[in-house]
Image (cartoon, rainbow, N blue to C red; front, top):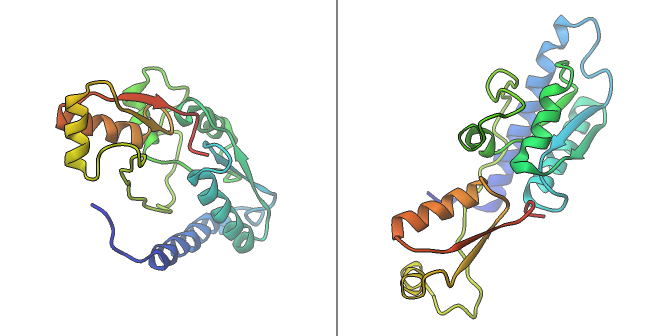
Length: 197
């Protein structure tokens, strides 16, 4: 379902979530002998520089820096369908000074990979949902399709003619495209990229 909210409303919701995140991060401070955070916060973003995940991470990092009074340092660790950055976070000291920006891949990876180097449930504590993003289906102007039904007809009449790109194997874009292939009974070749930046 595509949200019909205007962009500025999405931004308002996202900023409220940022403020809630900052508040939640500060809640345990009263129980600690030191105020939190007492040193810079490492914010691991398991996506490539310049992509949507990186952009969201940098916006959130700036808001958290302003709210917490400590630098929030963005650490892009892309690769392996977010496993590299997620593993680094899981192995970090559990003191709240290492944060992770995750997406649906966190829930999907256990189904795709048998031996993850972390437990996606036990090793992480969710704080808040930061953003919700809709998907859009687009084709190059040279493709003879102006609607989804025309694209499906083209794919059926020319099996394996069409390729589609995603931000990586197991990404939500990849899995959504595979769902389209299955539902429409068409063939397209998946081209996984290293992130979306």
